[in-house]
Amino acid sequence: MAFDFLVPIEDKVLAHTELLPSQALGKNIYKHTLRDGLPVLAIASIAIVGVRESRNAFEKKIEKLDTSSIRIELYKLLMGNWNSNLVDMGDIEEGDSVEDTYFVVKEIVAGLLEENIAPIIIGATQDITYPAYRAFDGITDMINLVAVDSRFDFGMEDELISSNSYMSKIITDKPNNLFNFSNIGYQSYFNAQEEIDLMERLFFDAYRLGDLISDITLAEPALRNAHMVSLDARAIRAGEMGYSNGFSPNGFTGREICAIARYAGLSDKVSVFGVYEMDNSNQSSQLMAQIIWYFIEGFNFRITESPYLNADAFTKYTVPTETEQLVFYKSHLTQRFWVEVPSLFASDTKLESSSLLPCTEKDYLDACDQNIPERWFKAYKKGFN
Image (cartoon, rainbow, N blue to C red; front, side, top):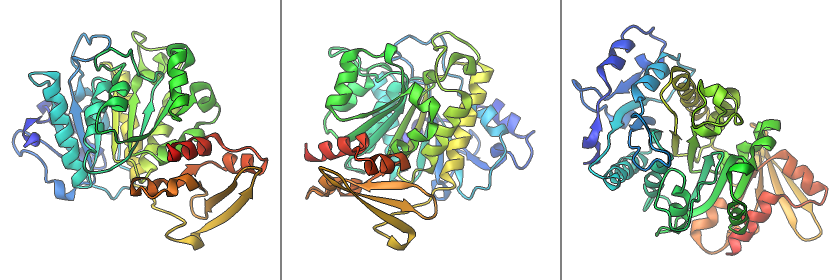
């Protein structure tokens, strides 16, 4: 059983937890300890798993990821008005080979998904996204992946998998379950023009950092449609992380990255949330803890809504354009928008769940001005390919 490879939470974390007030998250989470073993999963909605594997880092890590520091900062934070049970399953240490670690990650994530438990992965390097993605094999047919990242991470054609090239592995590896990939926060000077062109050819979505800083809500529809979110801490600006080595002066602020994490939690599709590439510093640990807190906060306020299930809870807008007739829906409860994508009504049942595409009010207003929303066009083209 892959769960046997999990290492219990360190005693220093447990000792620190004893000093916390009763409202603290650390006092309200079931923990994997040396004395008590693994917590019972039947009660859980969210599971925290640390992955300390870093041998495939693009830039070699000088020291192991200090997951205990992140846990101490997370456990300090006070609970919200939550009704979901959390478990902390401890850490996955390096296996005899990187492939061994990948296998354990895949099996543990798959086991949690089968129990309808959402894993939060605290990973040293972002290549862990690959085995987490492979965990969906046999569980969910087509996956929408969102990466919060300053880079697309395609790498070179002949490059082995690393934290800078894991997306190439996901795109080319069989079985190919990737339906859509969205990048949130890319910075043009970190990405070759060939990579930007590839995103266009594959009809993937990419949102520039500058556009998102102007309006962070642009990220919400992509996250609402995601099954899996991979967050690279290097998308956050260096000043927010407390150091500059390996980080850029440009990037998301702490407030913006926490808003993105909350959007991911609110999505009723997101089943796996991973944070990667942080280094060991007190400020970094604090921010990672707050990112995780905001994901949990969003998770506890999820609402499953669909005009196909409850038409009375939505307003339907039919917008005729020169080439298409677009159908939008607006939720009375959350004010969120969706648009129908007819090409996704194909006979292939894998795609039927994507027939309603999350969008923004701006997409609706653009359509009213006879401008086809780009996200609709890309989804429409993918449905025919």
